[in-house]
Image (cartoon, rainbow over the protein chains, first blue to last red):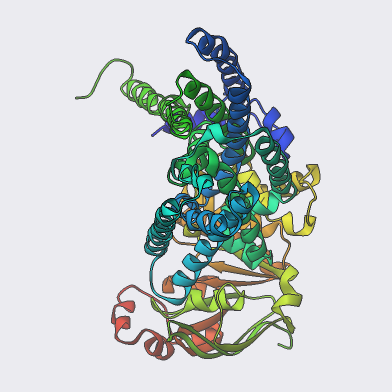
Length: 354
Length: 249
């Protein structure tokens, strides 16, 4: 495909290529003249239109909704950026295993410390990390392939979590209510304090990504080369795993262990369609994730019984679908039109050879 | 030959207790183009990876210019096999080459103009300057291989290791890559290539290591690239070689 287009492109003049994150963002010549600023502005306009539209439809912007929408936006940004690493490293299923593996940790933490959010999240994180560790041990010491190991750990941890949850619900404690929301998420339970926590921890996570940017990028692209050049790949891998676990654990309240992987992966997949630059991809993923998180939360404000987590995922998947259809160079429509144009050109304009 | 660019003693590597490389002693002098050859499953890539610490070794002692890997790291350039990365990754050829400079740059430092210039000149050396801003998926196999080569060139190493650089590369690109390797040799650098095409061994390489799990031969091409040694390495599979016009002594 695209032989002619390629030739034309190779004739493009040499431009000084951006080399830092900030300069990459400023690049207007990425996808054959297509700039990601169009998308950034587009999403911004969409977000601005969204507020009056939702008000017309009867969404009441009360304190609770604003807090939930803010939390959803921040978690969407964080998961979009960090989830992009999982997308690029082809570790989507690992993300799914990580989130499922959090459930028993939540339950055990509840049994010991009661309904203390900090304890629940730390329990979730430890449980997730234990899950990854087990997956690693299984793949290294046995001949099991990684997908099999993940399948085993994902289901067994989740089963253990469900068993513990059922046991907890049989206990006569009033405060147990709400624990089962960790399965599908319960955004309405998000408090302002949680949002502040997400903002602070998320900010630190993003700063770590920027600080180790080139090392993380190199490792994500070519692990073998990084290893041969003496980069501490285990350390970097641990950092990335830890960041993803943090993003997942923070997002559990919103999306729940089952849907969490959608929030993690979908923004990165959508962003991947629009750019050929990793910094731009992560930025776009953050924007898509943030939009999905905020919009999903607002839509769920239409009715008390609407599930916030599920709606956020639906918005994110719509963004993925639109991206796969219309993105330049990679999208269905672009590819189809390109093929048509090439065929026309080859046949000398009009003489279709069939 | 006094300085060995690479010296390996008693190297054994096993996958799940099945030996892939068994008790290999070998050495490669400074300033040569060396080929590691042997049949499929002979452990060529395994030996290379073990030497670079990419996979654990059961036993063995490896030195580069007399120093262990940890001290010699900055002298080593590595070109992984092309299939080891995702070519759909969102990055350009120029950016891939700049990755070769990350190590020298150090932690927390940003890539700047200087790095871009070095990377561009390496791309020029391999004839890829026009493709610098191409997304790597849009490059042909040969261009991808040359991008990897440019990334190793910017590292300015003393010894280069390449895993099957001529796989799925057309004849013209192959000659271009060989010319670059020869210019590296002219600068006194050492190049070690895992190679599978016996027909080109005598033409390209002045040092050969023949491997079939165990070491078969190690020395100057003129001395060790003999039908006797090839029979030892390739066994019965070698009968067709004469028909293919491989020149052996």
